[in-house]
Image (cartoon, rainbow, N blue to C red; front, side, top):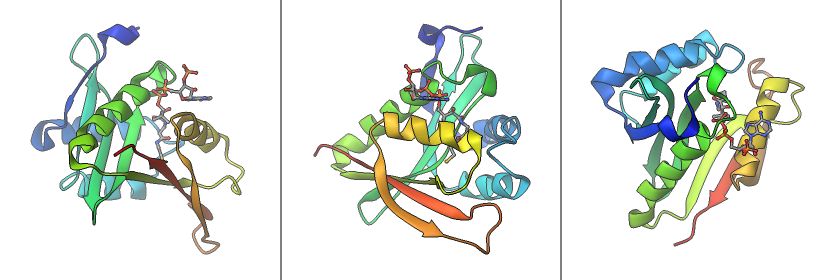
Length: 160
Ligand SMILES: CC(C)(COP(=O)(O)OP(=O)(O)OC[C@H]1O[C@@H](n2cnc3c(N)ncnc32)[C@H](O)[C@@H]1OP(=O)(O)O)[C@@H](O)C(=O)NCCC(=O)NCCS
């Protein structure tokens, strides 16, 4: 199993990395549905981001983002399941924060499944975001959407 120090984070290359990222997403069915992966395929044609490679240059994680009206948002993030909790997500997020620094972006948002939905995998996801310093910003009830009956928007305030 790769150790933390073997992970290298580099910029996401649209043409070369898209299918590798979608493979990781497909290996995370507890988080990403087929329709989610279809959306990801479209979004990643336009979003920027970073990938994490292991010591064999295999892509094992990704983070994408976009900026709109001076506010940044994480589009998609995922790490190969066997590498969860080894600091890869943290490394990708820190790389994104460094990217946002020169533009003096002060707010980074992310949308996720809300705590009102009793679904364990996303409890882990929220723990990650909260541990990284994100705070609850807004909850949106979507009773008509069985895939996301409550959406939680989290906000990380960035020093400018
Ligand atoms: C959420 C995700 C991106 C986090 O990446 P990761 O590499 O597993 O997380 P890290 O190892 O960098 O975790 C950093 C810290 O977050 C917290 N954390 C992460 N996963 C956690 C878990 N399962 N339980 C409790 N705390 C957790 C810990 O404090 C951890 O630090 P520590 O291990 O030193 O205590 C990853 O688990 C993932 O791909 N999840 C599935 C996809 C997903 O949820 N995408 C987002 C949809 S909105």
